[in-house]
Image (cartoon, rainbow, N blue to C red; front, side, top):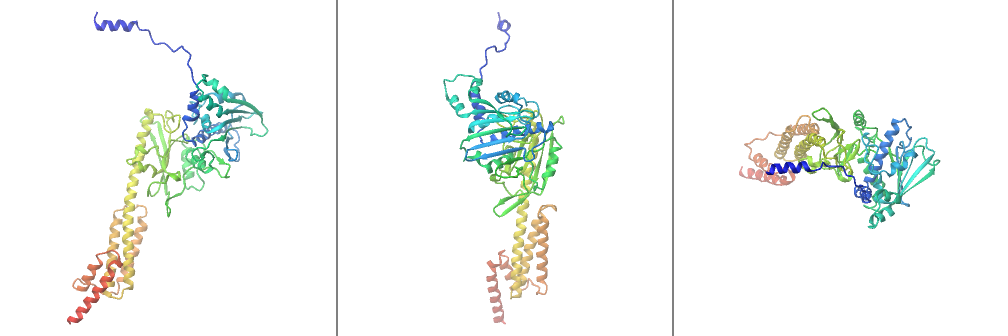
Length: 517
């Protein structure tokens, strides 16, 4: 029997694969993964709860529920008790569904609905940062409020206990307890998360209102500041492309809501402010004309990298208006990584098959997401070109203004000069610097930002030079004194460096001329 025949016979004798029939065990460590390991950044806890709040608020709007007049989400800090409470005034969870929905792990009913949160794991993110996690809620029509308390201390003990062999369900039954509360002191519809005995992590960042406010201004679906001049038109652009209405988040230390990170200006240095002067919109589709992404980019001087401490820089990725990743999400697409923090804008990923990963620090790597990234290479390429063009612009403007400063210095000294030949030579030296300024500006386009102002300065100083030259004796290359003085003045752009020597030469040559005669 040859090898081919043997192989065919053995293959025909193999049984077809069958389904797994043994009991599948899901152990306690899964809860540790969802409660702490996935959320290494403490502030991401706020993102998860605000994201769920936004979904509930969307549901309430669609159902015609009247919004709360003060806020959509209220975050209360109690430093003495080390407690944080995040309450939204959305649809809430009906009493009849409360326990089932709050104990279901990784099986969200929102998957496939277009909601921001759809895995059913984010609600446990606070467990890794507090001793007790509490959920309370009710929907319209419920007389009572349901409450569920998760004991973080017991949870950590069970996770460390090598002898505990219970299932995930057994562990949840040990650490979670349910109660029913009178409804009189609570809103008619709401959902709230309460973190009790918050742990001190990252300089106690979870109880730092300023840090939380800045973080939410970057990641949450919040409105633009009314003072931001481009806010209304950007919001109109986003709304026309299906982005849900932003939510009003208020922290207990201030009455005003959290606003999007965009603003009118920002410091480039302690003494210099840069200002946003325009906004560019973009949209990308694939070859089937399916939307991949859309967004906006603010225009400014691109004078340098925007300080990280401002929480402003970077073209950020968003999914249903919640940020995915951070300011460096597109850094790998730039020719130089440092350029990632020079620009300011948002990219809203629009294709339904592109979704964030579990940690929301990146999108799931799929062929469609690859198409999104390929299209965004054009955007980062445009930003890189703009950065280099603005750098060249600043170089030429700086060169022009430097020449004009020299020209003004020469004219100032010429006006006070007692020796006519020196005055004439200094005016000519000033005119030479004006000419150099014109050459620098000639390298700029007619519409280059700041060029018009520089050109008007050139004309102003050129006119001053013309006025000062009137009535002065005309210099001649046959005049040895003039030739000597001109050569001395040409050796430096700064009058103070050569003027004393030029005066001495004029006096010496004048004395020599009188002696020889």
